[in-house]
Image 1 (cartoon, rainbow, N blue to C red):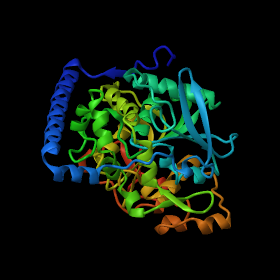
Image 2 (cartoon, rainbow, N blue to C red; image 1 turned 180 degrees about the vertical axis):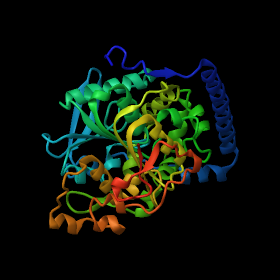
Image 3 (cartoon, rainbow, N blue to C red; image 1 turned 90 degrees about the vertical axis):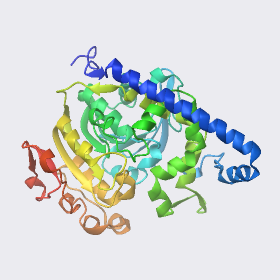
Image 4 (tube, rainbow, N blue to C red; image 1 turned 180 degrees about the horizontal axis):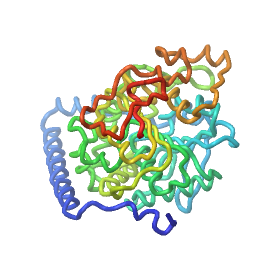
Length: 420
């Protein structure tokens, strides 16, 4: 595939479908305006409502938490591509193979906090702040976030850091970008890992109604300005919906002097504290919703599809059916995990990842590292024991094609599926 036609495999949905989406968008934004007008009048005449609003108002941090700029997790670096500056955190030996981590929405490089140190023992790890997020530049124009533009920026970024090819791990929005990049730039992708995210052709029309980012939300955000204001207004509520595990963990980060400082939720509140912090992230969805990969196109590199068994953001069936777009793949369902298995069940996730990426290479760990690593079940005791990670089976009934066989090569684990 030549550079001139590498993006020809992307197609735009029919104009009739686009018209329906924008029509629903206008209705949704009109309803929001009426709601705001009603609340404004109510606040003027009801003192109790004013007091309640003042109590509920989100107090955003006005300073970046110290742990987000320290180098404990990795080196903070920047690359400038034409008019866009991208921020990333890197760790590990630069002479090793590069492993690119692409975060989801709403997130940043910090979403890979449990992977960077572990993976950097074997790879040159690069955790990128996607364009429009956190410390990367935030172009305002919607055009800057089309699939072609995003993939081209990613290709130029890899060239800028001297990575001829990489393995990509993508979660949520990062996985969507990973799918598209693996399709359009196959020569630059060695392996691809999709975390809790269906293929773009299966995602947009199969979203659960109870998902925070369901079809109605996608239609609502198509117009500019109002959705950004609404997202900022409800930022804390939205972040808590996306990261309930952070609230349960009560996890705190420590400063360089050993004192306990801002917790992780405070970091996320800082990252998405302004209206402009939402504009770039929403622009991805304003564009990606209208693009599909042409039928018959498949990802050529080996793929690992990981998801949680309790993910309410996307349908499990859609995630599993994404294997139809892969030539070689493994599917893994992690129990007791929601939409962010790399954060919720990091030990199991990291073991799966390393087993897939390293293959038959021996995983050697020092005794001190093994002693300090928290364990969860069998996987924590048998590092890299990919066959012992899960004890549930992907149940799809008639949805499993004849072309799928259970992987006997992986210790006869029932919920690993490979393409024969």
